[in-house]
Amino acid sequence: MFPTIQMADLQQLVHSDQIRWFDCRYDLRDPNYGRLAFEDQHVPGALYLDLANDLSEPVSSTGGRHPLPSKEKWIQTLEAHGIKNDDFVVLYDDGFPYAARAWWLFKWAGHERVVVLEGGLSSYLAFDYPMTRELETFAPSTYDADFQDDMLVDFDAVKSRSTDTLLVDSRSPDRFKGQNETIDAVAGHIPGAVNCFFEEAISPDGRLKDAEDLKELYAPLLEEASPILYCGSGVTACVNILALHSLGKNDVRLYAGSYSDWISQTNDIS
Picture 1 (cartoon, one colour):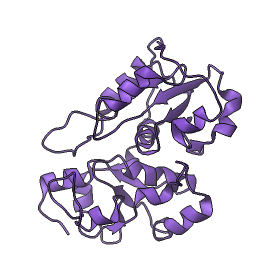
Picture 2: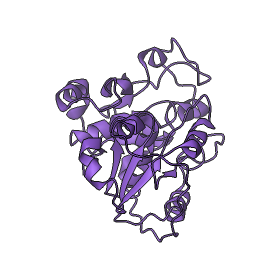
Picture 3: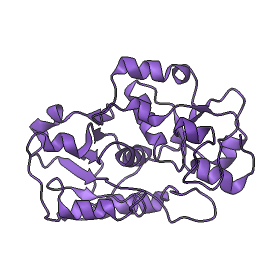
């Protein structure tokens, strides 16, 4: 199904118990922000997915700053939140990146009915729908995952990739060029990569740009077979992957550890 949804299209279903809402708000500079914001106010029925605790494994010597959760941990998270295979899941945050990461994880587990709310929480609020501080509980479920491992590559696959495999860095141009690295210890990019900044896919109001704009942005990628996308830690690259899925380009792969994993295992930097 299409990876995003407009609030105007969703409003007929807002009060349906078929929808499972997840709040994915987060701030890298203030890791407690998202949970505190959720506890203060959230969409009724929503549960919270935390980037560090739910959408990632604990950091180790390799795997990057936000390692993917193991398959076992992700299934446990889905089951603890009562998710069933046929649930219609709607993800939101203040913009796109963290909801996009959650979307990727749902798709990785083989969940079909999952979308990111265009415009984030502000688009929900624009319809004057209620917010709540009440914390919903759901009975644990049994989730039958069908992991799509062709969506994923690791360090070894990136290092040994063929010369005709396109590698795409989703970070800002200055970080790609090594001119303004404020997060990772080593500036630069993976040799052979090209740059496609994820924010170029998003309009000022937090929605995906229209298809024609996206086709222009991704023109170098659309004709390439199974390109690999990365960013700093496997989060914002998911925005590019989601946008490419919106164009029907579904063979894109995520280097989950991304640049922060790369520099933990090699000094080969451009």
